[in-house]
Length: 415
Image (cartoon, helix red, strand yellow):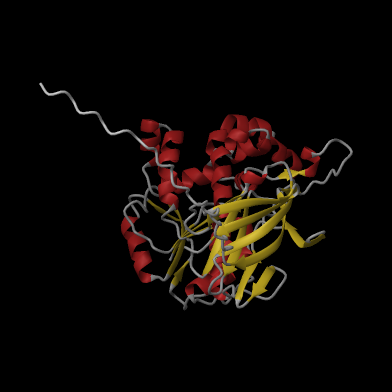
């Protein structure tokens, strides 16, 4: 396992915790850095001799290596820049240390901001690519847009720094290792007299310093959330519980409202649930034999129309057949055909938007801030209703046409 340690992303703390999960002598923690190309052989030997390696790298040391267990941490970019700035300021041997101490933060970033600009994205790209050469040839943005998605796919664990505490126990479940020092923390920045509010304001006033790093960080947050949910699902598989998410249960079949729903509330038609605040609302279904339709009533809509509610198979994201029937002017019945789906399946209901009441109703009325799209109730699983055969009208007796008497044809005269 290799931990590519981007500076100032909480790496020393995390590395110490993870290293404690391996036997003595089988974990290597950062001592200096590995530099391309002079340290290629030393780096290879380090990976071979250890089960866990954490290090800074300079140059494309990872370009030709297939590392299945690669870990990278990414920090919220403003916080990373501030930490990097403070580190440079208090280390006299650093090239920019004097400038950081003598200039105000705004002037410093205006003159030396290129060192900080998208630092984390550049560091990550530079570990795989000859960044300086490629950047001169194609430009940074073209290089980043083309190469960064591909490189991110090579990372097994992409972890936001603020989730390090959550990551370690999940990593244990994911790998089967057990860390001996889960709570270890180190490298807290000492008091240095820096006006942190002014420093943060100077960074945020220059968003070009962290444009791509901001995208990278939020991608890491989203990807980590998906990975975390997957590990927790394996730890405690969702077992169709008899809890508040279950809105229907009969003959072994049931309906559970998953993500994208507000808690149940009382309506004139029984308990109901608002969809929102996202445009997607997920439903888990376990159907018994003969239950081929997922049905529900929509009794209120907010900012959309009844035809805007569209069902999809959540796994393949193919649209499902649906029938909509107006029961009254303010109540519509939806019947979604799920006969082609497995007996346990998931359905996603999609709407174009979720509106807050403050955006929809006139001023002074129902000025709620919760974003909602429709209110549903009456959930059931059933067989499609059998259409009654149409009765054919009785056939009238056909009266025979009257026989007309005709005269015999006259003989033609002989020629």
